Amino acid sequence: MTTLPGLSTERRPPLWAALLIAIVPVVAASLLGSAATVPQIAGWYAGLAKPPFNPPNWIFAPVWTALFALMALAVFRILRVPVGQPGRRRALLAYHLQLLLNVAWSFAFFGANSPLAGLAVILPLLAAILATIAAFRPLDRLASNLLWPYLAWVGFATLLNASIWWLNR
Image (cartoon, rainbow, N blue to C red; front, side):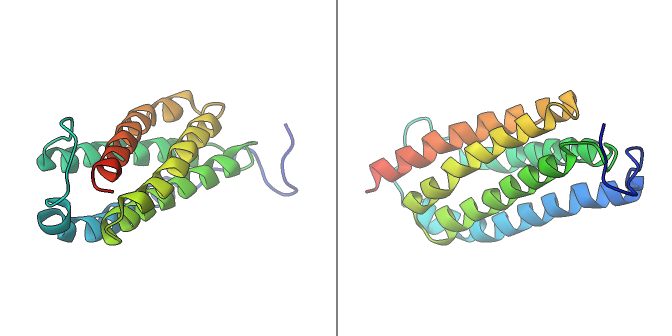
């Protein structure tokens, strides 16, 4: 195994640092996404035509809470992989890119009141989640598997987003 000069493959961030790096971005993403979403639910979103499989509004908060918790646990496990481990840096980059796209979707769909803009963000988000799962897999199989429910939900959200765009164009 090759490592960067002066970097031990056994070096890991302290537990407290890994916890902070895992939790803070997820909480920030959740808060930012909510800030763009919640003000639009009673007005703009309520006025949209939706497909019959659209879930009730109350289901989104507990589902996203569970998914964000799984995401934080998954990235925590990757953060505990030794720093010099090949693929670790790429896995963390993929993870944070998909998290950024997750937030961007809330601003595109709800913030901009645009299902079309939402589609333009959610399709790359799906690809980024798949890339993250693939990047996590060789480092920690459980971390990788923890992201499958997230991928499934975003896949469903993509269908819902596309249907809302179609019904309201």
